[in-house]
Image 1 (cartoon, helix red, strand yellow):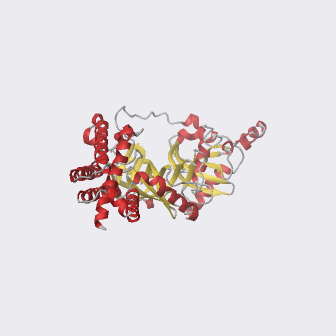
Image 2 (image 1 turned 45 degrees about the vertical axis):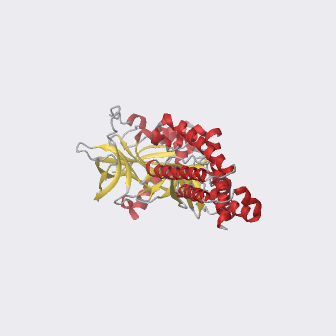
Image 3 (image 1 turned 135 degrees about the vertical axis):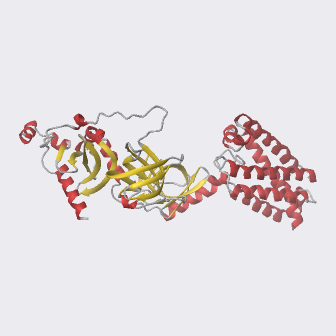
Length: 200
Length: 290
């Protein structure tokens, strides 16, 4: 916890402290444009993207995830200090559990392991109709099936008519179409809502 | 009572069949309804619409025969045959094409649910009862008008309640009313992270460094007026953290600030202040950088 606070203090000072100093460091002045990694992404047309993996986590050993892809392929995914983990919100690796689904993007190492840059756990993206609304719950009709979508106060955001996101979800209406980005509860028909897009 | 009930069934089944035939034969969206129905996987794209129309024609004939006196046993049996056909079709649709629409009583999209199966079952039962009807429905209606109207109304309400495609006329407004009265969605307060990220992505600071970013948002926290948003990055081959300071409660993408911090040493590798400071006289900047 103390480490986190120190780190945050350092980063805050880095971005807010000092004057409008531009690119002057002991290492020389390098604008980010000059530092762009000039490595083109080598994806052959029609072939699966080698730097992407998807599936369900079958085991977690240290920071190595074994993932069974939905097309039958197995992936080994290495989570590093620089990996972002999303599970309904930006979170930490200890919140990832066996049985979770994931999408991961990163760099494929020579031994076939994917060194993950970003992992999105249990992420779902649904187009649905609101069939009913309960206490902080949307009952969604999605392709003939019922989905129970939970509003998570403090996390759930709503975007109405493409305007900036707000935390007020009270403008949702029964019978209307919505798009929901959320986190699935594995092996259930329930999700937590990260963002709901609707017309108001 | 049971005779009265049986005698009224032909008119109920007949009216439902006529309604259904109207949707399939003269409905404006019949072609679309046929395309969405389970007839497509069953018969193929090309034959779905003709089959849909054919079913509508059969419904029209049987429905008209049932409603127009006299009612005969073969008519009721034909209706029973039609309804058990529907039952089988809906069962097939539920198993083989759960995403298809029923296409039964309205072109309104309605998935095949237990309610649709119950409705088809109820109509099948009513058709069987109609086969045992002694009187014509008109005679029953004139003899005991009150009881007959009450029974028919109750049955019609049951059919409506079991019809998902008619929900928007009664169930959806009822649920909307309940939401309006009880306000069940509490939601949260404060500025959601997405609002900050939306503002960040519109900023010049983000455009300058976006090609460096390797990860999604890793962490974020609030510092007074600002929300800090961190991404992992690779800067000249070194692991680094890109930290943005985004105005928390105002929309001012031009004031977004950014710093690139070396992960190993904690030194600031690069920094860009927001427009508020960058718009200062250039002399100030020159002084500070030298």
